[in-house]
Length: 301
Image (cartoon, rainbow, N blue to C red; front, side, top):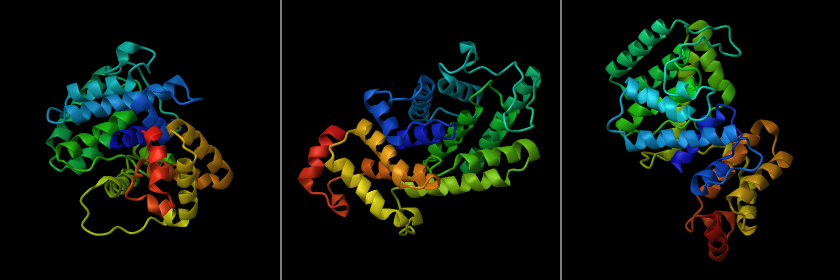
């Protein structure tokens, strides 16, 4: 589930409209989501490939040209006009929409700064500082023609994985928060807002995925406020015998008529996450019988 959460959340920060359930179904059986463009599907699959590289080669990864360029090649596969630009530092000038910042345009300067970023990142000992460093400096330099933010988000996980720490999956990070943090870096060379986004995102990732808990966490106010509707949605999906494809469409459609727009995306994520975590030991909280769960689960898998 971690792979699908990280792929989905990172893609969501690029405006991708796949749901979490649709992402899981794409990974499990290779089925594209209905009504989604090929670019969105490719973006999700590219994240999957890049995350698999991070997991499979964790012991060999480092902040070097091989790692970062190949990470870019995987994340940009079949998404750039020039296929040769995948994994290659740019020689063209680029602009960033929504900001007056203009990244370096001289190829020699880009090359030098890229090398300097990798050298400094490698010299940092603290894994959290390493992670944040690349989240700031790779998007600021824009070393590739496109897909730089995606590279920075995945690269931020390299030191965390290597130190056996919980990955940063950008749980509950809103797009406007993330972009606002980057604009502060681009236009003001200030990192405080992005730092706060990073810290909050990691705390949420840890709370979601860590298996070692020292104390009971505080209840999530959002889940508490919507507990009746969350339970209703989960129960209806199970009793309706829905698979992931049908459930994703049903949840989105019903949430549109029941949940305020400002809270809708998070509500859908919570419901889809609850369905993914459902098992025989926790079904009573949704007033489900073992026979009902088992009948549903064989198709859900």
